[in-house]
Amino acid sequence: AFALLKASDFDVVALGWKLADASNAVAGLAVAPASVVGGAPATGTVTLALPAPAGGAVVALVSAAAAVAVPPSLAIAAAETSGTFPIATTAVAAMTATTLSASYGGVTKTATLLVTPVAPALATFSVAPSSVRGGASAVAIVTLSAPAAAGGTTVTLATSNAKVASMPATVVVPEGGS
Image (cartoon, rainbow, N blue to C red; front, side, top):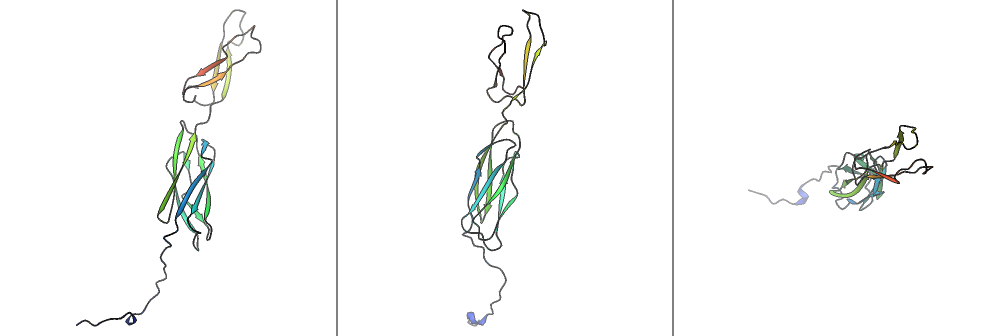
């Protein structure tokens, strides 16, 4: 036979844990600047919906591309609502849009960082042969510091004495060429 039990028939034992505040979560993720040249840094900012609890909040961070590195997590101090983290980038051959993610409290927010290739610069300019007799030809060679961008890279040429040496005003290095 079963007896009717009441709440007062049981002892309450404190287990030393508390339910997490489910209402606190990542409210936003921002990246500044939104676009960088590969190799340049950026800064990420995570915002929480509420101040971080006692002991702080640890927000998980992820980058979707190898060319963009973020720390694995960001610690936001107790009572603070936001924190910043460094973003490191490496050189890329083509424009790369990377998704960054911040997760806390069961919520994930994302932001996009655009990494662009380093613009090629003129590395060398040479003429071969270095001297010629009047009326003879020489070849000018331009070399870029990096592969030419999509659509090619235009190099402007000039001479200090157009009566002695003539050349086109520009030369286009084809895409991918250097």
